Image (cartoon, rainbow, N blue to C red; front, side, top):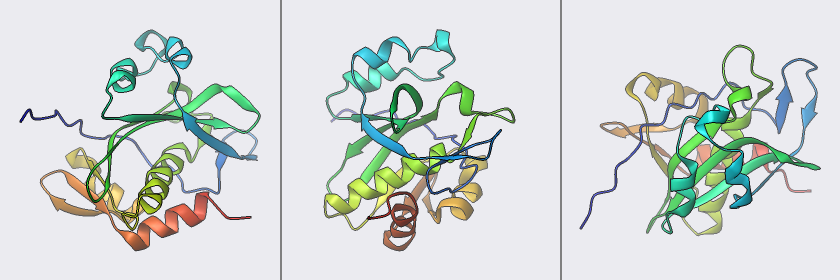
Length: 176
């Protein structure tokens, strides 16, 4: 059996919001998450400031790739998510904010939290009770514990259980 290389996640959950917030105006924008398309890949390159090889994630049949956009503005990708459906949980392979949503001059807050909440939502839909796992960089283990309610399982593995997952889903995906 081949061993899949796991990428240590280093996304920062800057703020848990109801959607995403513009850091300049303070305005809140509703978001939608949809499947990443082959057409989207043209914009998601290292040349355009993205850090990871999203074409490889997209082409891996064992992974599902999603994009976060603002409602009525589907052409500007705010962040990306790659997940795998495991036997009892969702595994976050990769999560990345758009280059303009990173650092002190970022345009929007709440992108990473929104994408993690979506992984939790899929977990509930699949009957996994919200369980989500990912591999964290050592320096961010405490950050994920505080911001996401994840717990440090072993080595670099982080797990989000039912209650924190439900809080994230309720925050970002309110039922109308």
